[in-house]
Length: 475
Image (tube, rainbow, N blue to C red; front, side, top):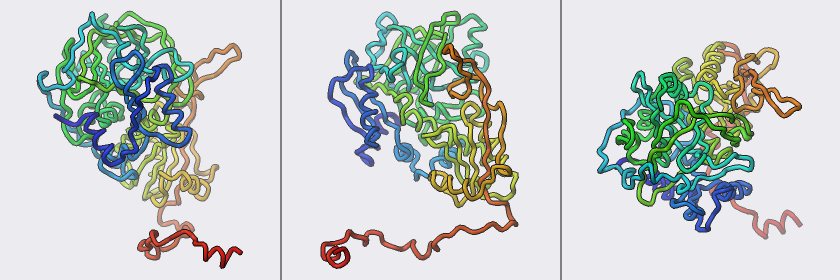
């Protein structure tokens, strides 16, 4: 069979054994799972956590898995600095999925019918203090466009209402939401499947910023470097990943809504919520000894998983417009920022690159900083140095009024009132040109040590001071 969550965990623990830790203790799904991740994060540690015993659940829970760029570079087979380039180049050359029979699909090992469905059997956590209840945070929703037949995949938040119903929260122009509206206009339920637990490339493919509707299965294949294996669902004509851990099948009801939220989203605040469409669960299929996968909402994993696909998608888009692009970084700790480095050939390249980035990730990017090729965009100190030495606010700053919103997940896209209510508003974006003038203008050079004078230095010869030397110099 093809690559899946388990093949990835095997590779991860072989190369980075410290990246996965097992929790044998019985943990409460209400803050217990996220509590471990929070406790470790306070001491600067972010390992993946596999909880073997979650109170009241039948499955193990894997959480906090993709918290480091090293974990991503492992399956892309590249250096950390090359992740955006490799990601962007891979999704450009998609690999079509292949269909396999149910008899060879691991996710069909156990089939739970509609009358037996009970979502409480899954270790679905309550993540943060004010959350309205348990949420699926790592579920990839599959839905088919009724007009074109195209399959679309995306990660949305799903508030669990009871044993066989949950919500789905679509934001703005989410493709899943646009497809659901087509079913809604026809007065028909929308068949869906929710995939829980698969290779990280599948998750990354599902949230890549792709042109047009669909293409996520093909993108996942390109990121895995092999065709994604699919199998026919039990309750619809949807094709779902054969090597997933768990598949929840159901339909979004066209005329039923329920109150969802609040839920702590990736910007670290409580926004969104209200009435959302309801999913009626019709069945579940899963592997024997399945692993339920969770993303720590509003934590480091949530941010890393969001930043990497966006960096790669922006790289892909900008490279087509500005071929002199070097690389891109949407830092996980500030997913509203985007740092772009160019070997600038003309001054207009800066705005072309910046606007392409903004149009690739319209919902959340707020600050675009463009720097020269000698600046490491993965080093915040270097980016800050470039802003301090190559940026003049009067000349090199472009503010774009009313770019984001109205509303959404960013707190600045709302006006707040004394009665506790808030109303949606538009907010601005800014482009900061921290590049040197384009040739032939000569700009002062950086003070650097010539590379030939340090590239062959063996730092292993550097040692600690010994006692004799302390007596000689320090007494």
